[in-house]
Image (cartoon, rainbow, N blue to C red; front, side, top):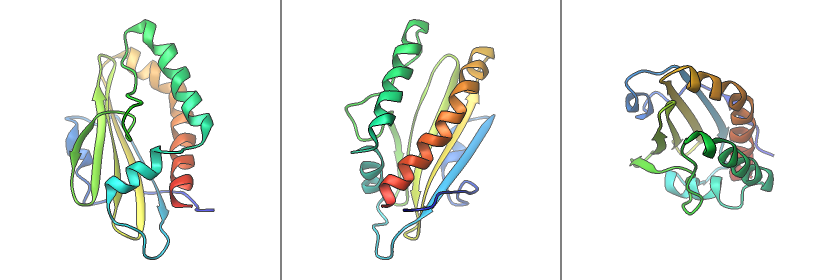
Length: 151
């Protein structure tokens, strides 16, 4: 089983430049098996296709809970759970802007490591209040997705 680790956002990542202010950031990585693809779009598919069933249930629960507040829900029709905003040869950035917060996440690979990074900009108290209970699930979800994709 692949071991996930907390890392800094990769130095060559375009992610930090995607928001004017960053109130929260994290990054997790796994070491890829030798000979693995360096195509971040392939890793997006591997991360979000066939992921553990508890993740899909958790995302549907999140969508049901936030819908009455007028917050955006994820797009479950595409490989990435939110709109793709930027693609480079090493990274795919996806995310969305909402009235409570804006977030961006990236899937970055250098051929030896696969890194998923997240940055968030809070707009108000609702954004901070929303993220407080989401944060522990976010960490568990990202680690699980990385283990699944790299196995």
